Image (cartoon, rainbow, N blue to C red):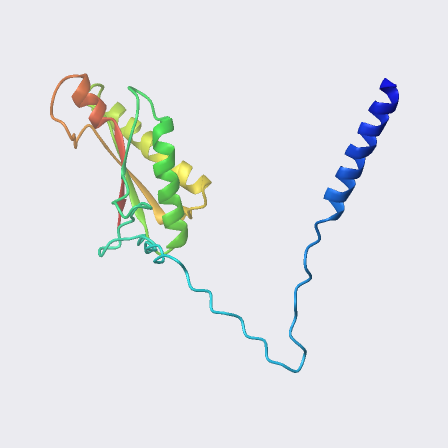
Length: 180
């Protein structure tokens, strides 16, 4: 008795699913006859169009490079004590300089190498040269022509901060990209 009732219940449920599944059909789209012109309604947006920000300029009125936000591109990279290896935080700035110089192959730069006051004059001039060469080598590796770059070392001769402590010295251990 239980099996007959269960079979009947299953049969009713199966029939209900079949009717529900077959009862919905999508209407076919109505196309106008070929001899009548077909006009689409204009697509009118519901809201005001969004403000489209203009593309930023890549150089200022003096031809100096700007970053993607229109700000002057940073031109100073810093070095650790007695080192000429580029720091990770300066790589992105130098890549932007390389991109700019590739885009404008007639532009040239001078890379100035600087040191702090510690060490002999001769040693600091050589270290400043190595720092300038590090920047130059990076730019050349990123597609800048060698003829666009000149390297000059000032050693300890042009400090940014005349102080005699680690804060001042860290500011003076630098390479500067100067556009001509």
